[in-house]
Image (cartoon, rainbow, N blue to C red):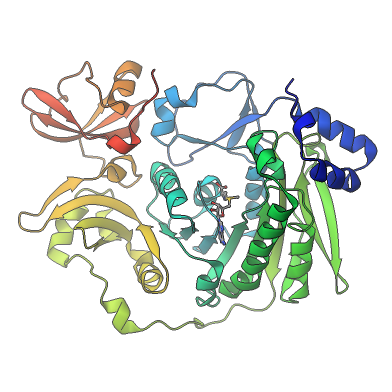
Length: 471
Ligand SMILES: C[S@@+](CC[C@H](N)C(=O)[O-])C[C@H]1O[C@@H](n2cnc3c(N)ncnc32)[C@H](O)[C@@H]1O
């Protein structure tokens, strides 16, 4: 038993003891000293034999399981291959809200406004049709790097990563079908998992987070289509960041509150909020009642009928200036892909080429001229136009769109680890390949590129992603 309950900020416990019954508050303190549940969610696009023992389902997400004892994830090549994402269970309640209220059978546009490190974005991406699009936004530059890494591992091309404030998206009026704002918050729900969160907490942190959330709620609904789904969540218990934000949403008069069904055995607390005669429900996950960390989530539908024409205008001249690779060169690039004809290629000013699904090229252009785009589609690699040669990027190897006829070499655990560490593997050649590119796989999933030379293999695993742990 840890003694986290003794190190909680007094102003926090004073407030929470008023929010909970005396009995609940005692149970909360006991639970915060208990074990932190461990859970993971599988990547439906990369089925693999995941071998954790003693697992049980997370009841509100079909793709997730708890593990009785935390394994060393860093020693598992499958996590590098994107077979699963380690995510605390409560956050996966988004799965329930989306499967109940989002039009997931349709091709839709989804914005995840506060996306890093990508837990909710990978969950959303798992649920979308191939022709849907996910815009994963993260304002903090440094935090967008792990977000991009996690989306790259997930492997789908239908994502665009941006770095904007809510007000920038407001100009894209009625553009998205679903908007998720997992707002930056005072993190009280993380006090058990990360005791440092309690050290950083103060009433002024709650106030400053609430101000950011007010701004988000003020601006972001403008980018949502009429009839679109809006999900607001935090990982805190503070009423200023939860109940008061639901009041703010109701106060706009633009939203109809939605209920999310759940089994009472899951221990979720319903929080009712009333404003202007309308009632909304928030769903609270709290340590002593639900198996997971703290979470608050609410769902709303934007009132009105979806407009037939788009409500924003972007200069066609600006859109034309985005450089797409010409037809003839595109043919060479398509050979690297499973359904090459379904892609167009964008080349940035560093000569790097990205595969963009044809169905979202127009959206990619709209976003490029209106937002700060940090990443798009799947990076194919560096393309030399003179000899039409591609030096393939790591992203392509681990993507779900790489061509099936590219040579692959399955390796055992030790070689997989050595490959990820950029150390010598026991294999020196690829079956049937004298010279050229091949993908190293582990349990059937791609880890990255090697280039076969007559007497050796060159390891192209990116140095910045290298496995540093002593395994
Ligand atoms: C709770 S975290 C998101 C966690 C993420 N949704 C996940 O499931 O992995 C909130 C994120 O919002 C970002 N953020 C901070 N200020 C913001 C702002 N003004 N607008 C939008 N996002 C902001 C933070 O950098 C942080 O990455």
